[in-house]
Amino acid sequence: MTATSAYEQRVVEILRELGVEEIYAKRKPVIEADELVSVGLDIYGREQKLAPGAAKAWQEMRSAAESLGITLQLVSAFRNVDYQHQIIKRKLAAGQKMEEILRVSALPGYSEHHTGKAIDLTTPGCETLTGEFEKTKAFGWLGENAAQFRFTMSYPRGNKVGVIYEPWHWAFQGAD
Ligand code: DAL
Ligand code: ZN
Image (tube, rainbow, N blue to C red; front, side, top):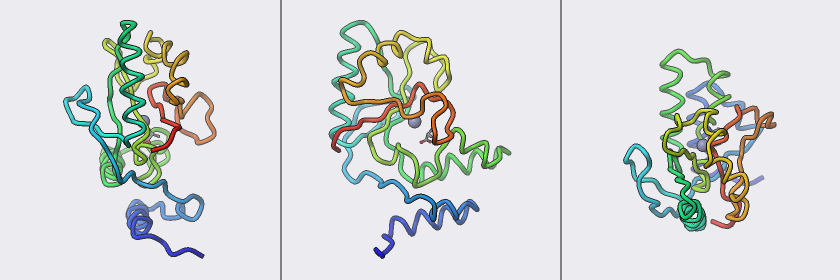
């Protein structure tokens, strides 16, 4: 048996606080990226970061789309465990049930955004983080070209993870 890392212990404490500690026994947390580079500002003017390999692939993919007049914008990229914890707590405080929250947001320690390889995207004129993104030219372009940059859509319709369809969430499959 391997020793539980300090990181995993921290995740377990957060899960305990949220009343969902049993999740840890079923699935180990994803590892939080330790090396991150800036990828500029998101649509809210916040600096966003990604793991170096993902950052490079993202910049290349965004430029390739832009050269065809298609604008891809960041809504979110790396998120640490504490940030994810805040998201969940905010939703609980707003009266949402945990079951409902988990259809949309991963638990702290379990979000692909911790890896520094996941991005949430939008394009001008699209309401962010809605199914409307699927109808955009940007989404059409991603469907045709993202794989070339090693990005795949993590939560297609009917995914096994039980997360709603997220046409905006793409993850880099290459090395950090
Ligand atoms: N929205 C995805 C599931 C996340 O929170 O990582
Ligand atoms: Zn996402």
